[in-house]
Amino acid sequence: MYALEHVEKATSKLFKLENILEKVCRDIQALGFDFVSISLISPEHNTIESLYGTGIAKQLTGFAKHYLEEDPKLRDIQADIVKTCQTEIISGWDERFDRWIYEEYHHEQLVRIFTPIVLVEDKDGKIIEDWFEFCQWDKITPNDEESREGQNEVFQMRLTKNLQELGEPVVIGTVETGYNSCQKVVEHNKLRELLQYIAKKSLDIWQAQLPRVLETIAEKVKEFLNADAATLHFLYELDRRYIYEVFSGGVGKQFLRACPPRNNGLGRQAIQDKKYKIIPDPSYNHNSLEIEKLNQQAFNAGIKAMAAFPLLIGAKEGVLYVLFRHEHKFNKRRLRFVESFVLRWAACVLQISVKLYLILLPL
Image (cartoon, rainbow, N blue to C red; front, side, top):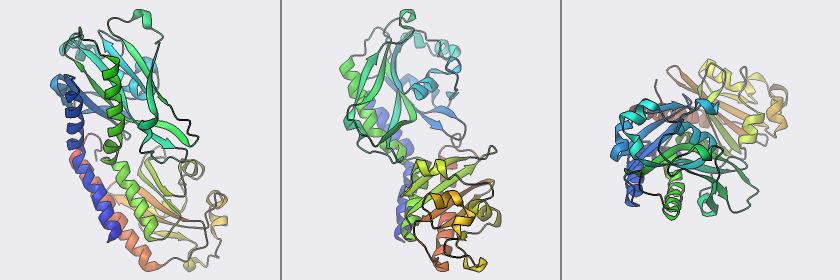
């Protein structure tokens, strides 16, 4: 019951996403800005979409959606902010704007700030909750500075503390805000107040999205089975990769890169048979270190035993791996409980996600 309560609490935060975005917008307007728009990334579709807006930005909520193009020449401004992780102040025309939106909604009258919503991970891929305490934003000179009009400035985020364990910043969305008059100047002290506030709120926004819920499921299953680690992979695509991959315990992103789910591995067998699978499995007369023969990559990473639980919801599929760094004898009663627990909550999470934001997670 302890595990179920934690996952239920994490799941309930999905219902609060809109309220969180509304509060962030309201607080930003309280800083003195005229409008705010928050856009979040959809990993499933490789897009960024406006989900909540106030003032004139409310008109584009649910309407503005852009692909995260790799080619800079093809990117919209929102996609470019995601890819560069830079903050920009722009008044007047910019080649990255959508011409029709710019003219239809009279954006020539505005001065706008575009900034990423960022999380910072440690070297193992775990979120550092207080990263914003070691952060500042430095003004840089854009390559096309001479061709820019009005107030056009670019700022790059910099971590002021030399933390060797830091990984790369992860962008989960963007904030667009500003003034209704292009004659008004964005003061740098006001800009930094805004950026610091968004940095503090990034964790709240992340916790109200599907990856955090899946991470909680992995955490609680790991604890219930007294395992060393767990990884959860969800939404399998045609190019043989999972959209969502989270982990808990003594493994991180390095392990996911070194030991990805195999097309013919334990997880795929669990999905095909719609039943959990384990190594070593006494019913197949496995010895205590059978994993060395069946999954050399995992064995080389220090894994001595593992279980795989299928996640099957309609056409969507995934797998949860539970990993042990020591020899382990599995308990069937506990395995059946986890199988039921995982299926129940995976279905619940998907149903809630569909209801809350069909565009972000369509069936």
